[in-house]
Image (cartoon, rainbow, N blue to C red; front, side, top):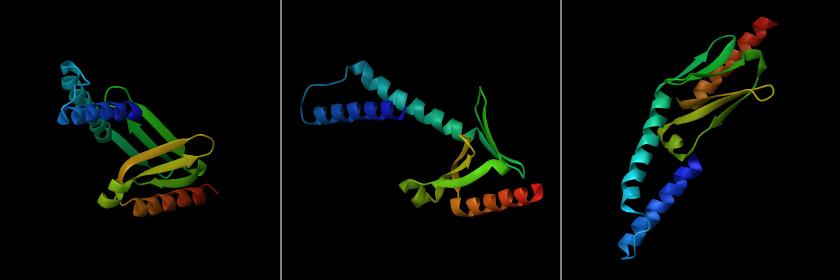
Length: 137
């Protein structure tokens, strides 16, 4: 999906640059209306998915529930969590947010998106997981 969006943007910007320099149009008029609508729709869907996502951390498990119409739930039990990863891009560094990924044994992964204060949040989650592991021993 990201590559298709990049391709659409490349074609639109190439068409705009061609128009500015007096060349012929690359895109038909219908596509000039359709492409911005598709980009706006994609952005709206992405924002709604961020808004309608619930992150749940208990002393037994870490869960992520996403979805407006259809629900998608990912879960990793605390004793099976092996690592915490922070994924932060340039905009996230400037605005102080990041994604936090919990990796369990095997292929289990739960990713929390747009988390404020990722380092403090990671430390808090680590203490929760360590305390739950001690209780089970």
